[in-house]
Amino acid sequence: MSIENIHWEQSVAGVVIKDNKVLLARHTYGNGKGMLIIPGGYVNYGETPQQALKREYMEETKIEVEPQDIIGIRFNMHDWYIVFRAKYISGKAQSDNDENSEVLWLDVNYALSRDDVPELTKKMIESATLKQCGLQYAEYNGNAKHAPSSLYIATDSDL
Image 1 (tube, rainbow, N blue to C red):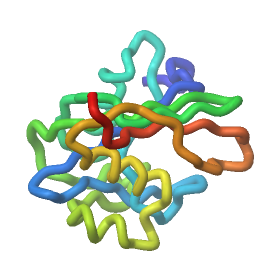
Image 2: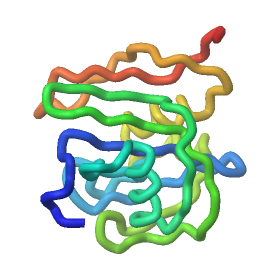
Image 3: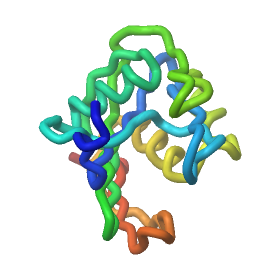
């Protein structure tokens, strides 16, 4: 896709957990450089958030996923970011050697304990592990460059 087709104010990500392991990618640029994050990216014009997630996962990890429910939404004055719980469909995880330098499956609890997994990714992993959920506002300082930010994440609830 050409750079003109990217909707820079809309982005998506997804948490895929299979056999109690979460798929993470080591980011190669920006604020997340060197960090293990959940895969995702910008929505293209004419694309739904769900289509964008499927495309981004395939491009970045070679994994086919199916978006499920929304487990987090972050808004700020600049853009929005939707995070889905996503189901693993097929594929063998491999780096795109561009946006990420490695893609790996990590035990969920181990991922949550690592210093190279940022706070937002940890919050989304935790949200993805809940059986029943409802989106609720959560304290999140966000990136000061785009402050203020609002974050809604999945929490245990009686639905």
